[in-house]
Length: 328
Length: 267
View 1 (cartoon, rainbow over the protein chains, first blue to last red):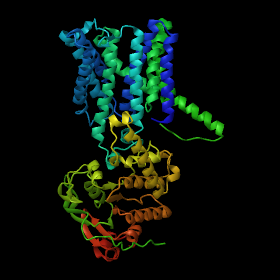
View 2 (tube, rainbow over the protein chains, first blue to last red):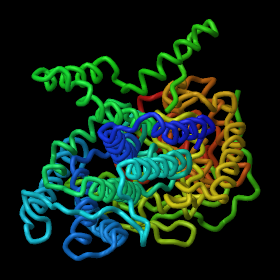
View 3 (cartoon, chains in turn purple, cyan):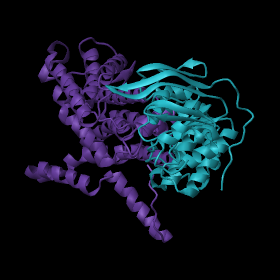
View 4 (cartoon, chains in turn green, red):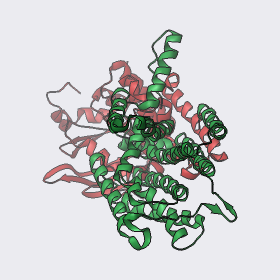
């Protein structure tokens, strides 16, 4: 990652470490856990949509595969949680290839529709496979996450679990986009930002990268699902529906699509917005919609993009000139 | 000012690229008709012909973007008819495009660094965990990319976003990106298109310098003056068929060529 990324990561790590000294309320902590889980998933979608330009409305389904793998293996079969993680990864890779390979030639709206259907199929499976998933009434009694004798029983421990995962994913992704693979992903975006023909002409196997990054983004979601299941101890199909897939997309659009840090911001905003609006009771949904649309209209580069633009304008004024540099 | 094409002594008599009866039919339309072409190592070989003569279709077949209907293509000992474009880069063929296919959203330096894709190996795992070898590789690629930038004269613009460059520099950037792949054969699709006289001379100079460094050049051009000046050999196409081939002097006197260009500026 770049130097400024490293500084921000260390800063974020410090904040994560310090927060529990100030926040003891379990409800607030649980929101922070969701923030961390959402961050992991949003970063995955950022790689997929912001970097390689592929939309997916199926990712809540992969979140669900992780959650149900953890839940089913521990509740129905009494197996250790790590096995739930491993099985979740295997099932996710299989599902991701099953969806990703046939849709490889689809773009734009067609890809959105295809992934929407795929997500719906996964949702229907969670709802209908009663014998495994508990059906529409959900799967209760998921035991806490643990390795051997070390078991996570308190919410604050899940806060650390979720955010350590998010930090690892964040660092991994920041490294990735600043190396060869990252450049390859950026190369075959739609014109004029990139060019598929141009990418092919320098030896980039576009199809292979499309599939690889799709699978990688789903793996982020499945790991988030493992944490979610053990933290909540109860999961139901409605947690993994189209609405949540859409919410994930909104997170990265609001935060700023072409930026990993934007995904973090977007996850934060969309996790906290419902909480902040709770005071407005009946108007909360209306305000929610207005705020999201407002962000999309007035900050087309997302919150992170708007922030960087104002920084640039500030430094340009300082230097007394126009600065037309655009970075990513 | 004329830039003479040197009689480059390293032009061998072996064949680097050849096509045998290469044809492309689009339904009833015969775009390329049984083309037999030979490119020798170290030469600058041009393909010219009126609009619609099939030149870009030939390029697209050679570079793997279009499947030939019939015929064979051989490059560096491989039969490459079924090769995909990204596979050809690994065996030493690169190309540029008539209408630029740059990575507009990336910086100039990053465009060139993309050219080194096949010369590097960091993947998702090694890149994500930023292993030691990846750090070394990134440094090496950056240094080599800077060399390419210096060669093409864009070393001051490395941090500019590619889409913001003027057209002439974008053309040069695409050439640089192709050179970064260390090609044995470079296909240039109308490298002078849209360039003024000064820029065209600059492009010609870069092409000659590339040849000096061992790159064989196959190019398509409409600018006949440029072609006459830098080519060792010229193949002339019309209606998908080869109508003449030879040195610039032979070609400019050829009756079929004169007839094909009748009404245009005298060759």
